[in-house]
Length: 505
Ligand code: MLC
Ligand code: AMP
Image (spheres, rainbow, N blue to C red):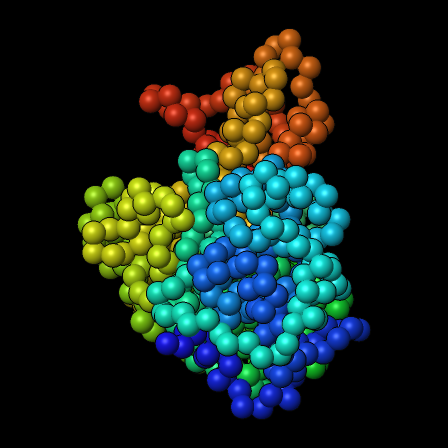
C-alpha cells in the first residue's frame, strides 16, 4: 500500500530543484530540501515513539519547518493536530486531554508551562521555534535522509482540527488523507495552479485555509510560495510584482486597500486573488477591482468539509456570492427544521456531501450523528440559497457563531467564561459589524447592583481563559437582556441596537 496523500505530493513535480518555499530575508527550500527534511523529521518522530494513528499536536509559530512537521506526520502515518498559537494554557490542556497525542511540539518559551501538562497527560514534548530551531529539529538533524513512508490509505486520518461548538466543548474534526487530497486536487485544477505559480502565503498554518487550501494546493502543483510569518500589508505589496497568486481572509483585503501602494501596476503580474473563511463585503470586492483590475475570487468552506464552493476562474465572479459547488461536491438547501429539500431560490440550511467531507468528530459519535442526515449529507449550520444562475449565496448562520478576522468565535464559550466572573448575573455575546475584523466580538452583560465589575476588570478576568481573538472588543452593561415570550435572549435585538458600535473604529 502507498501513502495516499504524501505520494501525490511527492509525484506532483519531477523537478526536485524547483523552489517550494521562499522565506524572504531568510532561507529557501526546494522540493528536494522538503523531501530530505521531512524524511529526517519522520524518522525523528518514529524514534520518539510515534506509531501509525498516533496524534502529534503542534502549537508553534509559523515557519517552513512547521510545514515540514505536518508533512513528516503524513509520512510517519501520524495524525497532525495543529493548534492556534493564541490558545491559552487552559485551552491547550483541554486539547491535549481530549486528543491524547503521543507528542506535543511547542515554542521554547511555552515549554516550561506545557511540560507540566504534558507530564500529567503522559505525552512527550519537543520544541520548535520560529526560526526552525529547537529540540525536535536537533533530533531530526541526527537522522538519515532515507525513510520508508508508512502505508496509509484514502480513509486513514491525516489530521484533526479542533473547532468550537455551539454547545461548549470544542470538537476535533477528523480529516482523512483523501478528504485533503481530493479537495486540493479539485482546487488546483479549477483555480489553474501550475508549477509557474508563486503564492504569497500570509495566513496562519493551524487552520484549513493556510494549511490545506494554500499549502496543499501549492505542493500538488509543483508551485512555490513566499512564506510570510504573518500578515504584513507592506511586505505583501513589495512581493506582489514577483508573485502570481494570493489567498486571504476578508480582513487581509480590507487592510491592503488602506495602502496607497495597492495599484493596477503593483498587481500587474498577479493572475488570481482568492478570499474565504468569512463573508467578503461586495463593497470590498468592488473597491479592490477598481484599484487593481482584479475581481477577487470568493470561495466557501469550513474545517469539517474543506472547500465546498468557488466562484469561477473563467466566467463572472459575482460579489456577495460564493459561486458554484465544486466538482464532486453535492450541495442542497433544506428546511432547517424538517430537513426537507426546498424549492430553488428559497433560503434554508446548506448541506453538503462529497469526498471533501470529514470522517466525524473525534470520540464524539453522538455529535457526529447529529450533524449528518441519514443519506450522508453534512449539515453545515450556514443558511443560504441558490440563485437562478446556480450561484450559492450565504445569507446567514443557523449556528450562533461570530467570525472575527477569519477566526470563529462561539458566543457560548465566551458567555460561559463571563458568567463565571463573580458579580455577573448573565451575558450575551454577539457579533457586531467591525470595519477591520468584519465582526467584532461584543459582550452585553448584566451584573448584580452591588458588584464592582467594569469593562476593564471583566476583560482582565478573561485574559488567561480565552485566546485573545475570542475576548470581547467591547463589554457593555445593561439592566436586563431582551427576551422573547419563551424566555430566550433575543440576540437579533441586541445586534440591531449596537449596529454602529464600531463604526468609527
Ligand atoms: C488578532 N487579534 C484579533 C484577531 N487577530 N482579534 C479579533 N479577531 C482576530 N482575527 C487581536 C490581537 O491579538 C491584538 O490584540 C488585536 O486583536 C489587534 O491585533 P492586530 O495586530 O491588528 O492583528 P493581527 O495580528 O494583524 O491579526 C489580524 C489578522 C489575523 C486578520 C491578520 O487574525 C489573521 O491572520 N487571521 C486569519 C485567520 C484565518 O486564517 N482563518 C482561517 C480559518 S479556516 P492586542 O490586545 O494584543 O492588541 C476557515 C475555513 C475556510 O475558516 O473556509 O477557510
Ligand atoms: P471554520 O469552522 O473555522 O472552518 O469556519 C467555517 C465557517 O466560515 C463556515 O461555516 C461559514 O460560516 C464561514 N465561511 C467560510 N467561507 C465563507 C465565505 N466565503 N462567506 C461566508 N462565510 C464563510
